Amino acid sequence: MHSRLVGILWAVAACGPGVPSVADPGPPVGLVRAEVVSPGPLGLPPAGLRAALVWAALSPEVEACLGDARTAEDVVACAGSRFRPSLSSESVPVTPAFPAALTIPLAGPPPLTALGPSRFGYALVVAFSDTNANDALDLVPPEAIDGPDRVLGSSLRPGSDLSGTYLAWREGDVPPAWNAFRWLAGCPEPPRGYFLVGLDQDGNRVRCRLETLASTLTLSLDDSRRTRARACMHATTPLPAPPPEAPPPAQARVLCWGPRSAEVVLEPMATCERALRYDVGDRVPGWWPCRTAAVTLELARAGEPLTPSRDRLFTLRFIDGPGAFRLGDLRVRVGDVTLSTLDSTLIVGQQTFTLGDRDGDGLFSRGDTLTVDEDEPGRFTSAPVGALAVDVWAESDARVVPLGTTLRWTP
Image (cartoon, rainbow, N blue to C red; front, top):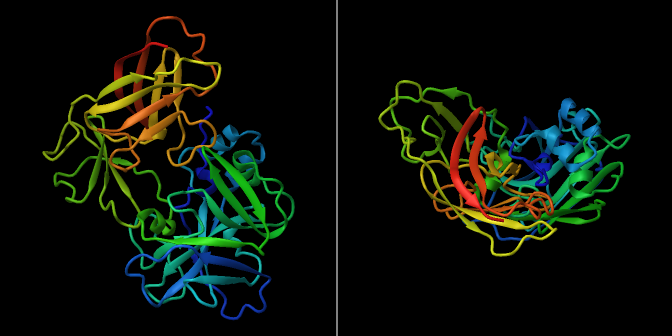
C-alpha cells in the first residue's frame, strides 16, 4: 500500500500524567525560543497563560518493531492505523513577554516518564490557559471529555497533526524509534542531547529539518477543537454495547455503521471527542436512526487516459443513505485489485483516496465525493478492454458495511 499513515509521529491527541516543573532547577542546559505568529482567539484571558512541553514516548513493543523497519510501510505496520504514543506534560516557566514571544529554559534531561526504553522522546511546545492556577497543564483522562485547562496553541502548523516543529532528546545510540522519522520524512541521523525537528509538508510529502536550539520555532494560537485536543489522553476503542431506550442528547453526533451498529459522540465540541459504540440485537429502540436504507453511490470516470504513471481512475459521489466513514476504513475493489488508504489527515506519497468533504467533518458521507487514484504506477494500464466491477465497503472492528456493489468502471 503506497498511501502512508504518519500518525505515529503525532497522532498526538493522546496524553499522559502531568509532570510539574522544579521550583529552583538551577542554570538551564539549554533554551527553547518561540515566537507567537498569530493573534490569540477572542476572549484570550489576560492572565494565567503558561507554556508546557508535551512529550511523546513509544512503548517497548513499538520501539522494537521500529528497530526492524526498513520502509514506510514497515513503520505503519508497527504502529497500526490508530496508534497513539504515551504522552506526558512538563510545565515550564516562560520569559519575558508571553504571549508575544517566549523563552523556555531546559533545566536538564527530560523526565523519565517522557522517554521510551531507548531514552528518546519528542515534544510539542504548547501554550495554555492555566484555569485552575496550579502551574501545570492538566491533561484530560481517557474517559473524560474536558479538563480544567485549555490549550490555546502549539508548535504544530494550524490544521495539521504532523507538520510543525518538535523538541527532541536523544541519549546513546540512534534510537529504534528514529526509523519513524527516517522512513516517513527522510530525517538524517539525529544529534545527541536536545535538538529541534522540523517537519514540513510539501504537497503529499514531508520534508525533515534538524536544527539546534539556537533556531526559533513558531506558535500559532487558536481555539479550535483540534488544538484543544492536544490535551487529550488516548482512549481505548469503545466496546460494543446495546443502545439505551432513551435517545442521545440533541447535540450528539450519531454515525451509522449499517443498520445494526452506530458510534455516538455525545459532545462533538468538547475538548476530547469520545465515542460510544452501540450494536442492536433483537430489540431496536424507537430513536435508532440506522435503518435498512441502502447507500447510493454514483461513479464518474476520470477524463484522462491511463498512462504508465499513477493515474486518477474515477470519483465516487455519496448520493444518499446513512453513515459517515473514515477514509482509513474504506475499501474500493476494482476488478480483482483492492485499494485502501491508512490516514485521512496526512499521507506521505501519492494519495489513493481524496475526500471532497462538503460538511467539513473529515468523514465520507452524504453529499461528499471520494476521488480514487491508482496505488501503484501503471497498475491498470494493461487492463482488459471492457467494464470492470467496482465494489465499495467500509470495515472496522469486525464490522463490514457494503456501500456500493453494482458500480462499473471502464478503463
